[in-house]
Image 1 (cartoon, helix red, strand yellow):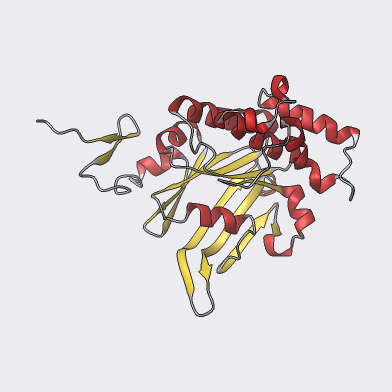
Image 2 (image 1 turned 45 degrees about the horizontal axis):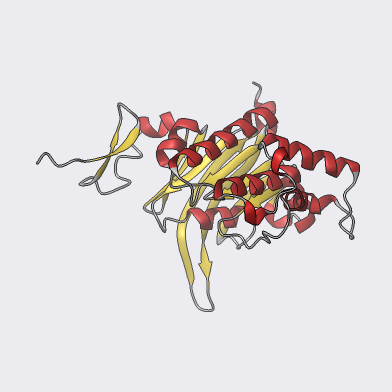
Length: 269
């Protein structure tokens, strides 16, 4: 691939990014010197311990909260220069514990993803209807499209939120903890679905997760936040450099290089 075509393939980039919060008197930096580039068609996980800054990073990348320093670019356009409407055509966002009316039907909630493209009355065009049906089909929800969302299981409702993001038809999807409240089977099912979406649609998905072992198996790239530092690369690249070896106190959990998974230390007694 030529340098020029590879440059054009970069979808999201962070340059010398610092993230955190500001109050009236202080600036609280959680992570600084964040640099990475994500290409079209990649599944990328943000992983780290509780409180490491995973959600803060997603909110900063999506413009939900201001960055403290540095720059974020989407398709080589500065995030700070994009209007809300233009941003809605580039990026869709799925947040944990998002306040959503479950009195809507599956189809109605998914159709909200078309909001950046509809007129001021919110009328769906034929193209909008096609995009909604395509999204429902991608997550296998056509049989449940007329059900109320409050009648769905947690796993099914998570699929609805993914379908809404797909209906928005943006090249980039950001998701915060898409497998929260799901059992092991449904966690794997949702992450496998995200992998399938990336392969079939050439979208890129960046998601924060505690499912480190699953992420190592499925993701193209990993953004690891460890002790306020960022490690970025393919799972194998991070394993080779020993990036996971000190993520947790090793008296209880350790990273097994051979199986490339975290395991619990068992007492011999």
